[in-house]
Image 1 (cartoon, rainbow, N blue to C red):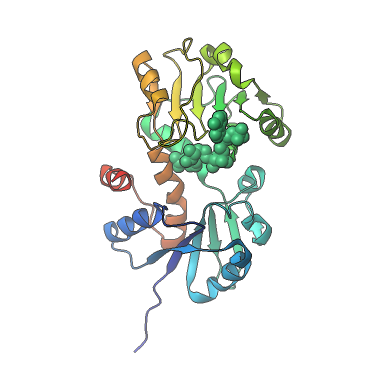
Image 2 (tube, protein in one colour):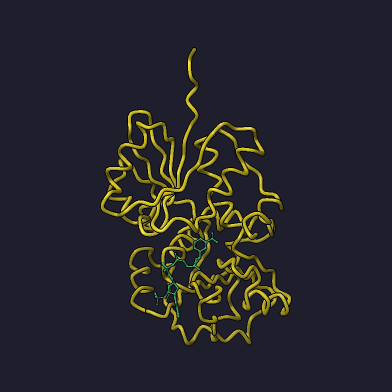
Length: 277
Ligand code: NAP
């Protein structure tokens, strides 16, 4: 009797117990009747290379990568997509049978798809975007906005040097604005994105001057705990279109699932509720 190989995938990080990815994957396996397994693996940085090299031989077809390995995997992968290279981090690895590792970053795509799903008429080309933050998430958002022809992106970050590094990496359509001067620019933004961890449960509040925020601005917060941040609540009361971060979490996982298991999952309310439970 021949034993069928069940494809395996994983999420690698340290710590890893907080990861929501296993919830997503088991939900999709069940929903689409797919035979597969997805497991969280706590990997010490010193073992990352060795573990990644052996995974394809063990039947793994791919892996998601989270903190603290997102940058290091680029030094291990055999091939890197342009977007992962410019962001400087990868969150999705695909393995070939021969053991080659392809690294991609789907965070930016997840961000854009989430906005498009909520507001199909949202046009990233319409005007400038303000992006708060200059960490990994900000880099993914900026890369995706540039890819989608946003004419200008204004970056504000507590540590200005980190934002300035982004202008060097991403080019002339980026401009650094002072963290304390965001309020002076806000009325002109077509899109406003919080890509800092401020406003998240257990973190300090996001305190920027929002008085001049226009109701024409689409406001998105990458934070999803709480689902409705103070920023989104303020924007909603102003009449703005608002998008929380939970959909991005789902959308960034979709390309890996479809590459590895051959089915493009759809977003539904049940999965959002499961993730938030
Ligand atoms: P990161 O690389 O650690 O960057 C954190 C950012 O927050 C930096 O810009 C940092 O500024 C800023 N920040 C932190 N504490 C601050 C404070 N007290 N005052 C002012 N700024 C502060 O993290 P990340 O990976 O980019 O993630 C950022 C947020 O996005 C997190 O909340 C994360 O959960 C969320 N996220 C959500 C999704 C999703 O799917 N919805 C995906 C990715 C990330 P400095 O540079 O000055 O430190």
